[in-house]
Every structure is written in structure tokens, then in C-alpha cells.
Image (cartoon, rainbow, N blue to C red; front, side, top):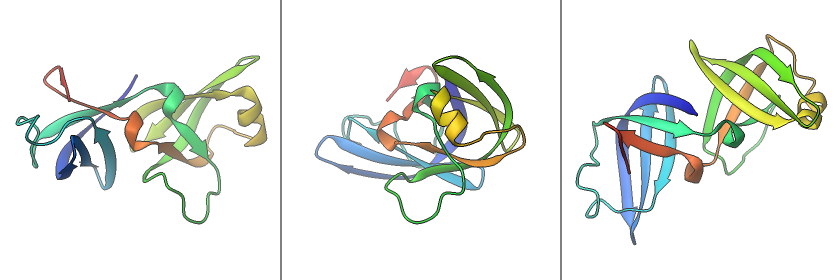
Length: 137
């Protein structure tokens, strides 16, 4: 499981849903939660939280241009590639923190991934969990 520490900077709630924006260093990540501010009074702007997401939910892009619906985009550098027959595990450096992505080996080959490559890591907001003190929101 990938984990990044950050601070909540904005919360938008409506109809039992919340869009939570979290500053992680100079980057901002979003998470969609199945709870509103009324239902989660512990959730507040300024709160330190951990963002967690599975290795299989971390997509990779090389030379991405144009607009896409994924707002969670992180600059990363490939550190190591462990190729399997079906899946490959990609070890990434994100501002000194290690992240891992698991993608198909065909995708890794198509992207021509090599250690040192600069990429963008992509995560859908509904695949990001928000944790604080062992409590998942």
C-alpha cells in the first residue's frame, strides 16, 4: 500500500459525499469519500492525514499531454523495475518517498520504461483512502 502524509486544504460536501483536497508538499491530491462533513465531524481543514492507495491503482504516463479527468498527478522517477510474465512492479521516487505501481508487463514494455525515466503517476480520486490516527474516513 502506498502512503503519503499531507494536510487537508479544502473539503467540498454534498449528498453524503465529500471531495477532500490534501496538500502533499507542493502537490495537491483529491479523495472522494462516502461521507459528508456532518457525518464525519473529525474531518476538517488543517488536519494532518495519510492518503493511501493500492499499487494496482497507481497508473503511469510518459510524455502525457493535454487534459485528462484524473486530477491526481504526481511527478515521479523510475528507480527499479521488476518484470514478471504478466505484471511488472515499478519502484518510483516521488520527492524522496518511495511509491510502487503494479502494471501489466505489456504496458511497461509499451512505455519502454527504464530506470531514471521521468513519469507522471496517476490516481483516481475514488481510489484514495484518507486515514488519520488509524481511523479511515
